[in-house]
Amino acid sequence: MFRKLLLATGIAAALLAPVAVATSAAAQDVKTRIIRFGYGLSENSNQGRAVKYFAEELSKRSGGKFKMKGFGDASLGSDIQMQNALIGGAQEMMVGSTATLVGIVKDFGVYDLPFLFNNEKEADAVLDGPFGEKLLKALNDKGLVGLVYWENGFRNLTNSKRPITKVEDMGGIKLRVMQNPVYIDMFNRFGANAVPLAFSELFTALETGTVDGQENPVTTIQSSKFYEVQKYLTISRHVYSPWIVLASKRWYDALSADEKKILNEAAVASRDFERKDSREASAQSVAYLKEKGMQINELSPAELDRMREMVKPAFDKYAADGGAEVLKDLQAAITAARK
Ligand code: TK8
View 1 (cartoon, rainbow, N blue to C red):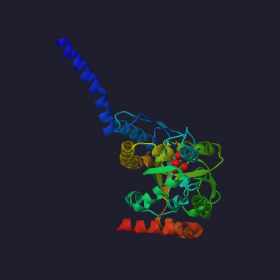
View 2: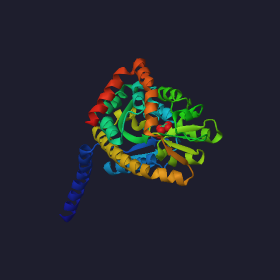
View 3: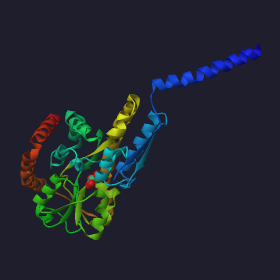
View 4: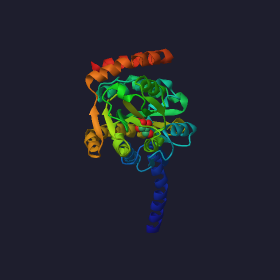
């Protein structure tokens, strides 16, 4: 009888086991997922730290099933190459500049018009609000899913030729810009010689003198060691630059509802982490760059006003080139954020 009981228990256990598995699987439909996440900056940067945080969050929220591996230093390709890999389904995720998305959704160029946002708070409100959401959604038809915006930050100028205290000082400087017509137009108006180039080629281009200067937030100037090849830093804050976290739509569409929820929520957590971390790092960067020997100056409010005047035609050009509606919507969203 004892034996019979054991047997019965054994059978019961054997019967129960798969049932239990089936039940938990039904409650949480989550499979093992390998996620290749590419980014352009080094591991030791605000981007790298946020990717690491994101990977940990995904692992925690999926019971270890989402295995995200970060690939920094553009080791999977430049921003544009990665966007195409996502569209084709050869890579799952990435983070990069919104500016380089203009070949896919032209309206992303609107963020690159100069002197739109006064501070990060305005940027957060607009990017996380209906305006930013609408642009993210526009990617869906193009094979991409835009999850959240991270902060790249306010962009500043560096160069190896001379301090820039007035706009005329930019005259003739070969300045690398992102591959985006708004940047090319803006810096040519300032008198520089704008050279569009992938970020992954930038350090070498500065080192060899192919270009004299570039523009990026101070955090990137630090983490990419541009201070080794650039003498002058000018705090101009000419554009607030977002990063965008993207997923391959082909890959995303195959996820279960539970998996999508985990991914979306972890992305929001990564955004909050990244912005806080970037802002803290940014506050330290200027002192660090000074210590590394950079000569640093700020553009005066009067000079910034002159620059604003000079680039007004860039707004008209943008509107005339099909951007009138998105520009109007963005300006309305910024006005609303200021109230
Ligand atoms: C990194 C880039 C970078 C951007 C640039 O891949 O290209 O200057 O600011 O952050 O997206």
